[in-house]
Length: 253
Image (cartoon, rainbow, N blue to C red; front, top):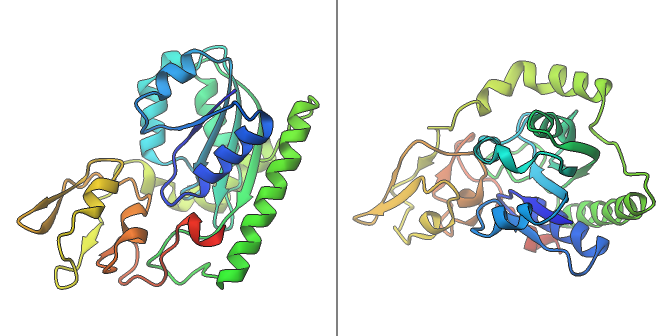
C-alpha cells in the first residue's frame, strides 16, 4: 500500500499517514507535491488517497495531478478518504469516479469530519476542545476502517447513488463551478503584510512571489488555505474579509 494525499492545513495528511501506519508500519504516505510520489505509485498495486473536499468536489490541483498522471492508475486498487468541515455527500465517490475513468478499481471510501480550515469565515468555527474531539473521533474511525479493510470488508462511505445525489444537490449544483478553475480571489492586506516570504514557500501552486517585500500572485490559487492559516500577520484572505481563526492540524493533536 502507498498513501497519496493533498492537504492544505494538515487534516488530510494526518488521515493518510495514520491510515497507512495502522495498516502497516512500513507503509508511507506521499504528498502529491513530493518528487517521489510518482515512483511510489508505480511500485505498488494498492493506493489510499486522502484529500479535503471543496464544495463537494475535488480541488483542482488534485484533479490536475490525476489527469496529468492518468497512465498510473490502470489496475490500481484505490481506497479514498475525504476530509471535510461538515458535509461532502460523495466526497470519496467523486474522486473515485475520476480514477475509474483511468482504469482504477475503487474498493472503498471513508469520510472524516475535521476542524474547519476556512480561516476567514465564521461558519463552522468550534472551540479548541471541540476540534480536538473531532480529530480523536476521526482517528477512531480510521482505526476501525483499517481493520475492516484488512478483513476484506472496506467501508463504503461516499460510494453509491444516494451519496452521489447528496453531493450534487447538497453543494455541487450550486457551488461546484467555484473549483473548475483556479481562483483569482486571494487578497493581501499590504498594511499588514511584512513580505516575510512564508506564503511563497508554502504555496503548492507557486502562485505567490515576493517582489520588493510585496506579494505578487499569478491568480492560480487552489483554495487550500495553507497561506492564510500560516500567515503570522493574518494579512491574507480568500472567501471572507478578515481572518477569524487560523487552523492547522498540529493545534489539535
